[in-house]
Structure formats: C-alpha cells, structure tokens
Image (cartoon, rainbow, N blue to C red; front, top):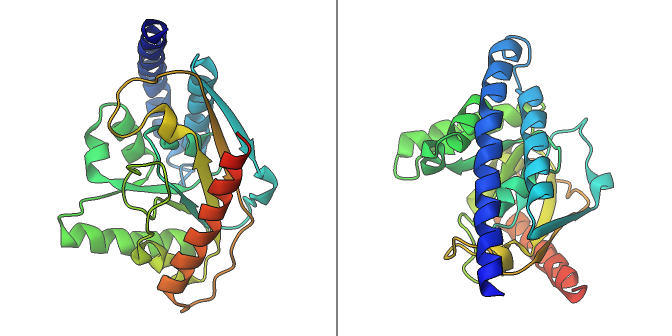
Length: 246
C-alpha cells in the first residue's frame, strides 16, 4: 500500500506541474489583454481559481469540502485570514473564488510559474530581511483596502509544525485596524496531514476541509493585539469543531 500511495503522490505532483505549465501562457495572455482595464487583476484571479479547482479535482488523493460560502460578500473589502498548514493552503485560497491580494514571502516569487503568476496578478511579495520592502508592503496593503480590494494573510507567518493554529502576529492586523476593514476568518483542516512542511509526498487519502466564518467587524484604531487574539481563539475553536467531525 505505501508503494501505491507513493505512485499516486508522484502522479499528483506531475498533474500539478502539467496543469501549471499549460495554464501559464493563458494567464500571461490574459495579463497582456486585460491589465489596461482590469487594474485589480480580478479576471486573472478567477482564472487562477479555475486552475486550482481543476488541479484539486484531478488529484487522486485529495478531496475538498468548503462550507460557509454564504459568508463571502464580494461587494465589500475584507482582510481574509487563513491558518497555514501546508503548501496546499494556497490552492485552497484560490478555490474560494474570492479576489484578494495574497501577502507572501519574496522567496515564493522565485518559484517558476507560481512566482511569475503571483507577480503578474499583483500579489504582495515581502522581503522580510529588508526594512524598505516591509514598509512599502504596508503602504500598499493600506492602499489596496482603501481602494475597495481585499487582502489575504497568514497571521502565523509560516506553516504550522504540528497542524495546530500558532500564535498570530499582531502586525498582520495593522492594515485592518488602520482602515477599519472587517476580518474574514477562514479555517483549513486536513492539509497538514496530507502534506506537512517536512514532507514532499502525500501518504494516504485525505479530506481537506475549509470553513469560512462570518466576518468580524473592525473599528478604526482598535487594538491589534486584542483583534489578533479574538481571531485566533475563534479560529482555534472552529478547527476543533472540524476535527470532531472526522
């Protein structure tokens, strides 16, 4: 059985690579033809969402369930907050079909095709060792929210080492309290079991669960620390609920 899962895992990686290779020329053409009038790159985002939907649908070892879609209001801007269990989380973000600019490490931008797409789609890549890069990113984050677009952040800062929700970085909530933008909590479960940060192959069949919680209203100037703790506690409880359903 381990050999079977190894073969299925290799197939899963190959289908991801093939899908992305086929997809990128289409995405590049979309950038050329739509960027003059689609400044927020929403068309490109929905195209990426379609790609990720296909990738997960074809993958033989993963099945995805999303609940709480009714809590998404695309007419408003939000700071979408997700727990970070695995590389798979990026795919799960896109299958929400919720246009938002992702905040990611600059190193991700060096990954062929994936990084190129993030750059062309206007996502924010931060060099954590560069103070100027961080300040520029903060200003851009505020501007995005003020212009009516949304952000997506991983407040833990990195992938979980045990699948649990780690401590949230208060700074992740800075733009929300600066602009008075509501938080949209999204809880992921199952991605860590499928592909933890220390693994390269998926062992076994896994169900990925995504729960979109009701928005948390935010007032300008409220405490970043209190908002971070409130959001962390709420998402931790939801993670427990999802796991109790297994």
